[in-house]
Amino acid sequence: MTSRLDALSFEAHQPDRLAHFWSGVLDLAPAGDSSYGVTLMSGNDAGYRLRFRPTRTRKVGRNRLHFDLTSSSLEDQRETVARALGLGARHVDVGQGPDAPHVVLADPEGNEFCVSEPGNGFLAGCGFIGALACDGSRAVGYFWKEALGWPLVWDQDEETAVQSPNGGTKITWGGPPFMPDPGKDLHFDLAPDGDHQAETERLLSLGAKRLGPARAEDGAVLLADPDGHAFRVLTGQ
Image (cartoon, rainbow, N blue to C red; front, top):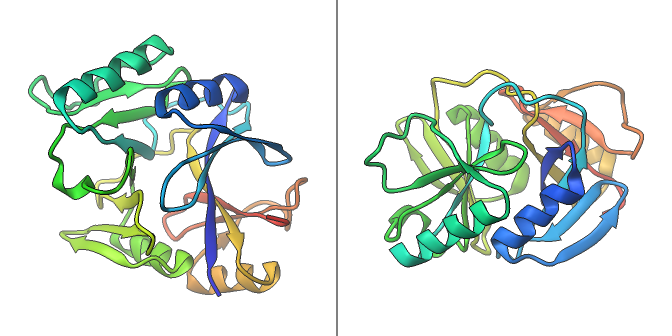
């Protein structure tokens, strides 16, 4: 048994507005509203959706998870940046330096993301959302390999990455040093392939920890991976 990555979930003060931004940047169609939040179809071979869930939590630092978007040419990179800025993004400095080939932006709620340079071999063939870059340890990369059943495609110098057998977005972990909790962030929403309780127990046996009550109001179980990053195990997906 494994869990399917149902969605990459943004915590949002204004879910509809943030969904509109990412829909415009990525040219994604709505997947409809649900009890879990506003969703967009990702159009990615990895099969997940983008979800925007309401929160009152304040963002107090850099996200631990961010998108690396791909570019086919310098003109394509410039067009993506211009489109994002026109929809409400802004340039941000995360220490990348003036000579960095990638462009760092933040969406209207401050979630950082990168527009990568053309010719980035690591992201080749991964689609427009080339990677979800995560702050995390080598051990947590191995946890998510087992949790999702996705093969490990990178394991070097404390850095790891997994990718769906179908291709699409790579999920990467950069190793130490680790950033402090940013408050508002992105999270994984998982949908079990089989029995919900049995899958929850399997994730716990892999090193996950329970957070909060047994179930949230929407029926989801809130867990944390071995690095302490929260994720949700959904029901009825």
